[in-house]
Image: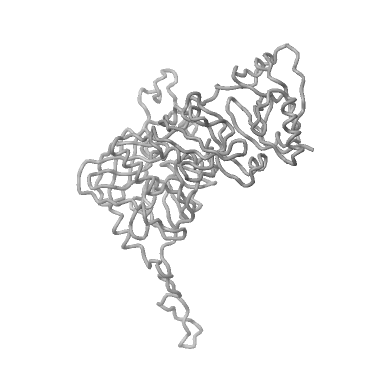
Length: 509
């Protein structure tokens, strides 16, 4: 549901730090009138301009205050030999496939080292970092600013928000706090301290560029975008405001080239604070769950259904027996609010549902049959992401197969799609499950809008404008009715590879 955007890099190897130019007016020199007639000008020691109100002349005091709480993290983990063999120069590395034991062929399991950043959030040794910094770690070493090296253990990890908590033994450690109330504005200064390229204790500074960024990595985080030079090894480091309070945890960069282009992303403090407290208290994160597959309800879809500029999340499928199905939600419903909170995207809906505790009632404002109504769903507990992926993985649905010798069903062309009804022959040809209903695409006109938008042979059209269609004649009738009503497009419900979705398609003349 959230495809990773091109150019986004996450991981300890390409970690992040936030920040940019820090000094406003310091060290600038301006010309003065020459006094000796030589034509040379003396260099003034006065700044050319004064910093604007609120801009610091230096971040030195803030750095001195917060940097002792920031640590470098060195991690040793098992190396994936099959991946190492893909690295240029390591193609000849044995993969141990003969023994099947994952070793390097000599009986030894190869190791890999990586580094990241983190920071103390309590005097008794709890440290926040990114999940990807410590995931799979066999040995974790924390290096403090004063040079102390301490062994750390993992307290808990949350893959969904890329946060983790580790702990070192001891007490009276310097620590910093999350800032959950005094939220900086876009354009306010921020400071980052971290471990770029293994250079621990490095400070950089910049401004907040934007809030609420969806970078396609997780549905549970609205990232803070920060204008900054970002470098490898700063993953898990803190972003501070000018008062030395943590306003974010650095987690990703945008980089088409793999290097810094000055766009970084941090997990907001309120999310990090909530998740880390849960990890410390129990080591496990619980989230609400509806049991519904959703996608963005786009402007094209809204236009096809005559809903103006409505935005929300459209339900494409339901888990059998899940909370949403039991609560009466239906495929094609457009969810626009949860418990009174407006949602305009599928990610926003997922985040609002995730905030619920299992057993809480979710009051969903939806559009069904172009009328607004409310559906109440009792939240369940969200399964682990790997379990969700396994349940919806490849091989669960229709895939084009061999063509049997039986005669082909008659075809009708609608919207540039050659459609056939699903009979036993068609069901066998495309390996469709018994419960699948609709019409099957047997061919496409190359210049059709449907072809341009990715529909393909073997896909099933299950509904048009929220009306089920079980024959090409029914499909043609719905499209004709939309055309007579002055509509320029229709909303197709489709099944591709066993997964449901919606797509707005233009009506051909």
